[in-house]
Image 1 (cartoon, helix red, strand yellow):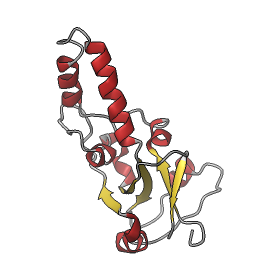
Image 2: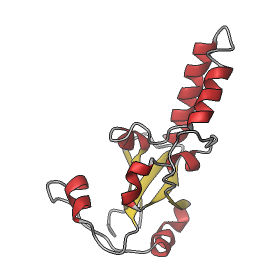
Image 3: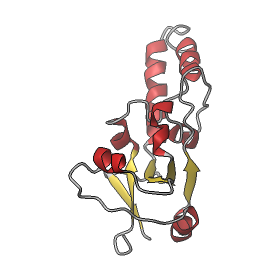
Image 4: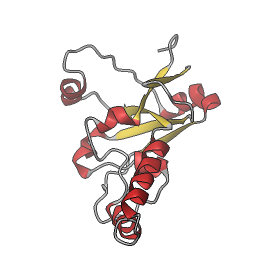
Amino acid sequence: MLSRGLFFARVKAFQLGDPWEGAMGELDAAELRQATIYSQDNGEELWRAAVDDHANSLNSFGISCWDRSECESAAFWKIYVPLGLGVAIQSTVGRVQKVTATRNVIARAIDYRGHRNRHLGRDPLELLTTKRHDFQHEAEIRFLFHSLKMNSLDSKCGA
């Protein structure tokens, strides 16, 4: 990690495992549908443009996910590294922020209250740090790197 840097995956990689990743709040989506599809002659076109804008704003971020539990979890190893080809890195939020400070990396704990019956707004950081209650066992903290030039499948931030 010291020679290659900290890995930041694109949002698309997370959406393969969880289609709610980066989703709008349920109430925000309902209001957007009402303001576009149901209220405009070209509503479907406006809806698609808004959804594309939403996806583009999310895909300008790279994400590095960390578990903030006090000890390792055998279940995590089985779920996320089923072939045993991973490594565990122990650090602190402060240390990670220190080595990524020149890259404007933001640390945020995950809000596990989900998307249902909520307004989450349009802030990509809010959307990328909101998950369903089903994932609360992850006790996740995310480091988010904003880059308008994330063209490759991944981006790396030197550590």
